[in-house]
Amino acid sequence: MPRSPAQTLVGRPTGQIGIVVRDLEAAARRYSALWGNGPWHCWTYGPAILREQVYRGRPSRFSVRIALNSTAPQLELLQPLEGPSIYHEWLERHGEALHHLAVYVESLDHAIESMAGAGYDLIQCGRGMGLDGDGGFAYFDTEADLGLVLEAIERPARRREPELVVQ
Image (cartoon, rainbow, N blue to C red; front, side, top):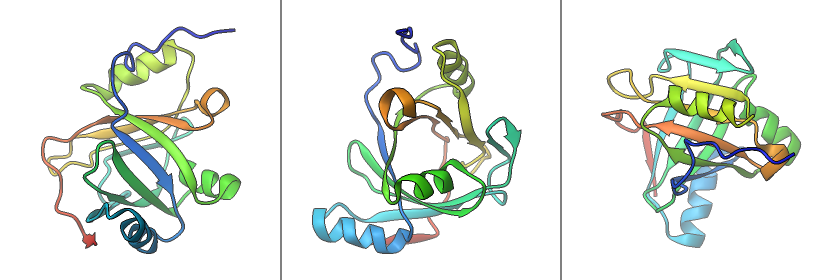
């Protein structure tokens, strides 16, 4: 049965393409060598930064290293560290592969409500990645329909300094 469009997605371009990898720094160097698309700014998102973490409907403690470049759409490399998490699941089932497409939204709460209204469950989220404890991300179970996950990102007002920059 066809689903109704998620209003949070209508008219929004893809802002980010996420790829799960086993070794973040090695993957960033590979992408830069092939594509010349560095530098990559790297952070670790986990309990030390995120004030809220939810995995499959329950409070959780996951951590992931991410690397972001400045292309449009932005590429994000994700290396799962602690789990359980959807990153661990993906790596186990698919290996290193395209994981998600993301859109930037003004309100993560509105995006979660909109996606639920369109019939897509929230499978993981985190809040507090910004320097001031704002910003967040939410992933939705769209794999059966799209072959990948959709993510909504509420950008923080100020981003933390990267832990590492990979050329």
